[in-house]
Image (cartoon, rainbow, N blue to C red; front, side, top):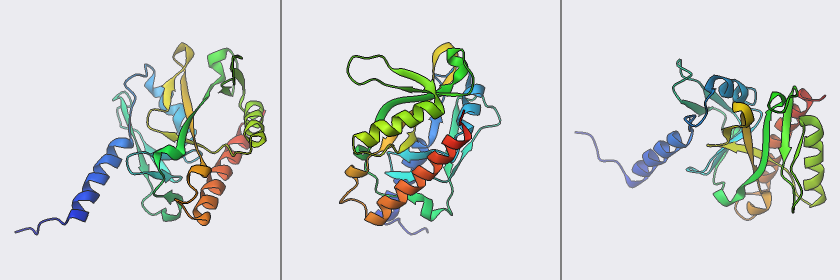
Length: 206
């Protein structure tokens, strides 16, 4: 007869189940799923993924696509051996929506990667080539004394104009992690996200 599970083991099983569900991304609202998946794959391991259910941030993962890419679901599979690339105890209030979107330039009659930056106040949002817009965005946050550390979470893969795929960006707020995470962890998160972002920037320079 199998021994009953301890409370800790039961909690872990529920946690694993919740994590699994949170890392299964439903593409049901996207009409051109193959194009959306192809777009997302270009950012694999270049943007960290956050799971709100288990309060973890993953910088090393694989995007698993079913053989039938029209099934309407993909899975973000964290690397189980990348202990140093997984950050635990990241509260949900430390991850906020930015209103910033990445999408193919074809959506606006251009080429390459484009970025949409929301306006402050009553102005119109900016739609710029990624390298130009990214530089402006970094400067905007820096002027406010903040860091722009973008991450993805379930629901950020969306559809833009003309059924083009897009990625909405969330960001990590390091100020919300002070007192929750050690300085070493804060620096590690900042360095990993920044290094990935610099690599992404260089790969899309005009």
